[in-house]
Length: 97
Image (cartoon, rainbow, N blue to C red; front, side, top):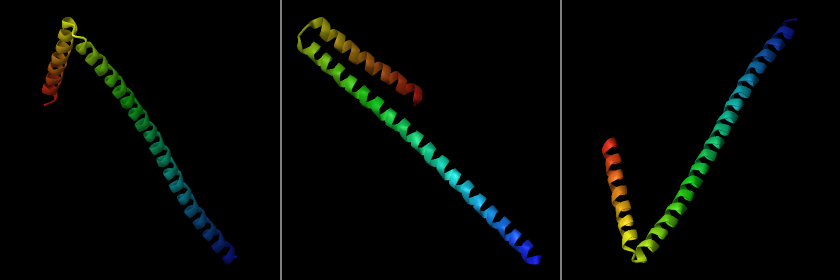
């Protein structure tokens, strides 16, 4: 009888160890899933900034062509846009510093 109780105790001990290992594995799996989701967010952000860079290059090209055309009104609009942007950035910088 004593052997049967000892075996039952060993089985319970092993079962507890196995349960702890399964819980640890579940935690690792959740961490991997969270990391993969975060990686998707990073990839999406990279794509967004890449798209914004392409749009900015296109806008700069159009502004350059407009200035090269020699149209005085267009040149004044370009200068106003540049000065306005610089003032806006200076104002925003002042808010955070």
